[in-house]
Image 1 (tube, rainbow, N blue to C red):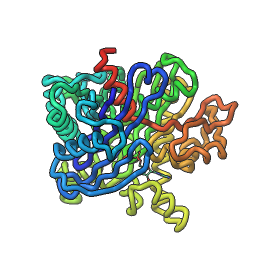
Image 2 (cartoon, helix red, strand yellow; image 1 turned 135 degrees about the vertical axis):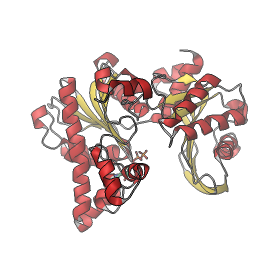
Image 3 (cartoon, helix red, strand yellow; image 1 turned 90 degrees about the horizontal axis):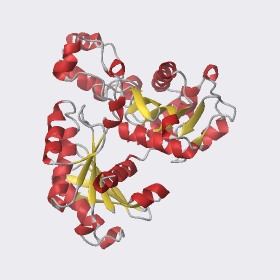
Length: 410
Ligand code: ADP
């Protein structure tokens, strides 16, 4: 079947068309027929597309809202120009949507019914920056393709619904959890799951034997402790703000700081929260950029003190989480890196793994340096007790496969 995968953000829409079915999934032989990104929806949108040969081309189009953007995507992927082999809308058999928040209700991917759409809407108060746009993507696809084409929601939180109560609760009055759902939900679940799944196949490990720590290091960053193939703890919390140092997010912070900053700087609490979300992390410390590639260049070429400090804090926090999870899990078989930074920055991986010989991890520097640009592989020495891997994440493929399974009823 042909699955259209949509990841709708505030002014962006990422899409793929994937050909998949039970046989292709079993043989790991799904095909990506087209992919692209639309940015600056709401005005003169910038569209970057790739056909099956992977050649990128850019263009602009006036796309006033998500509905217009999804219409454009459906039109393009079924036009001859995209070379997908799809010639009409009827060739799109299902749509898989990335949905950020599924609360406690969704522990797996589900077909979107009016009831599910209502639940996604109800969870807007947990994820006001994401769920409204995910829902807009669903409604736009329903309009473009009609009710006959099944839509499936794949939730970022679902993979972490296996956390035990002692891991997901905050140590605040219990009624706040009962009354308002204040707890750790965790995010990036589709990525952690995708990485764990690929790791399993690369190493020939059974699902129940997977005991790893996955580090998704992109603009957003999170760690996940996976035991028996299931998430038992993760660093993002009630929102994606908690945990690791990220591009523009602070990660862990003493909550008493919020009111203190608000008073000292004359800001409201929502303004302080916005500051922690969008002015902090690598950007806040360096004062330069949230982009790790640029920070590494600054550190290398200009020996910039704050760029180096931001990098050091990023790695220090990640290493602390690895240590905490090793203790919580009673040891692991591997640390697995993914995301734009995890997949492309050997110097960051080396610094996070530095001094981990006590845990049985010894990095092979040349193997580490060779793993960039989407390559998967191990970069610890053969005799390391704790292995280190790079396993590129493929969230879109997982969304396509989940969609296929849900629609097929398997
Ligand atoms: P998102 O979380 O938005 O999906 P990505 O996973 O693409 O983002 O990660 C973006 C981050 O990856 C940026 O900080 C970027 O600088 C970093 N990155 C990408 N390529 C490299 C590279 N070659 N070296 C270092 N960092 C890189």
